[in-house]
Image (cartoon, rainbow over all chains, first blue to last red; front, side, top):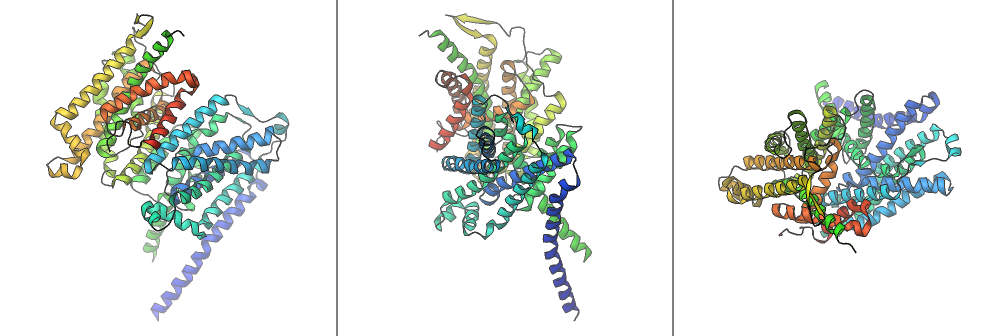
Length: 324
Length: 292
């Protein structure tokens, strides 16, 4: 009798917790959607814009690193290609922004497929350093070809509003998260995971590793390109070579690992954590945030491979054990 | 066509290549022995550069002499790094170990770079000795003393390291461990201690490279990534773990970069090195001087 009651109680508890998660997500999304209606403070909107941009970059890097197991250190190149395409089409060719934005993602994807066909001949760590070298070569080339600062034309600046930028970044972050959430339902995702676990075994069972890695890379670069387009929409003026800077790769790597690689929540938690800690410390101590992230990153790799997400679930398990 | 500028350019390529070589041997040693890819190597070079700069500025110690101090200093720092961080991944399998060493040394790069900014600001520093501008001119080709001395010191450093690895018991223990650590440990070699020594030696070589770099280049906290990339390019050209090969490949890269300005222009010199690197990775992953 008591056992049955405990069972029923457990069932009710489980039903409650299974509802809790979607409810919390819904509340967060609604609050994020309503922020510009409640506040005009530019600093708040700018901060949240950065959070969404970083969440998207982390999420996109995670698609290739977390699900296909490929450490791509050239991710910044896709961000740069996306920014360059979108900005060029939008301001120089007068293409409607949303079309230019979409083209940014698609061109980055096309570029990534060529990039991938070359670099996927490399395995493991050689892939990592090869992609880093290629991206650096791209950055240096762009710095040579486009040395001048890229500024929005006067009439566009006059019409500049923060709100659409905010919603674009938020929409993109949600789109990326939803894609990664639904990804496991696709058949091809199983192949991608198989390649991550054991490339030779995957190949032996009829999975083409190159095609599956290219699929993950294409998806990853599509979102990185769109993030670049968002950046080009948001920033009034910047040096084109800055969008190719390895900072975009490294920050995405840090946010993903600190949050928790290979999960949907990890890059979100990591991106939020990264920007909030950085902006909090930037006021007084510019460099200190990098020392903290560097140390945290080392600790995550050595001790806690699941990042903050795993730390949280461990804490929660510990807490429930104590309470019961 | 007047050949003089071309030869002058090649001579400078040789000097620069010597620096690339000495920057790469430490990285190559550590990777060859324990399959640890330390991408913080450039940041260790940066630390060596700062040590030289401060010894020169505070005590007036000549940058070439200060190697005798920066070397041991970085050796001790390398021991601390290995015992505090890298030893925890040496028990992993080879592939996991390389991947995790890349990751934790990437974190280390961030920490070292930003600690350096915090301590010494982001300003660029230069070591300007009293003989900095002097040199000899043979047949119209200039040989600045600092550059010639750097090349000679680098060559001596590599030669000493090579002799240590081939002629001493400790060096042979390191080589045995790099070939097969299980067999080495069965022969009574203390593998963990060998790893500590090899890692610290690699760090000391970075300190030496930093001293030589500081004489010809600017030293700033942010130079780490650029030197890591250079060292990686050289190590991949040479084949991982080959010491003399790394020095030769460094000089080769210096000469290729010097020649490339006639083909693609001076502003693309760096790009040539990086593309060459990717090309070698694709075509000959074991490197030009590698065996397997």
